[in-house]
Image (cartoon, rainbow, N blue to C red):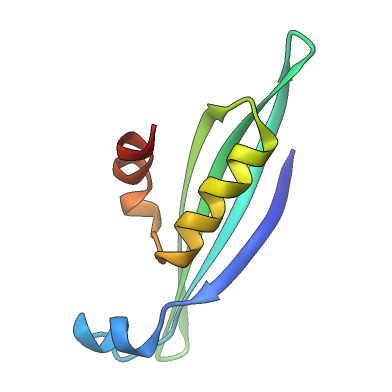
Length: 97
């Protein structure tokens, strides 16, 4: 199961620093599945770029991050606050865990 957690547009300041002149939206999802009566939570990040009328979507899911729903929410909040993209999710989670 996949549940929407939150979404943000990358700040204009960060886009400008990277030389990007089009909006980028990030969405964060908590995924879950039951395993031996206990839930396992994962994280999915979806990046949507809006460039000259074209839409490009990039997605990355990391399964079995934690078995604690509150910890999953804490991680999702950290990812959102730092505008972590799909390409960086595994490195960030490796550092956190």
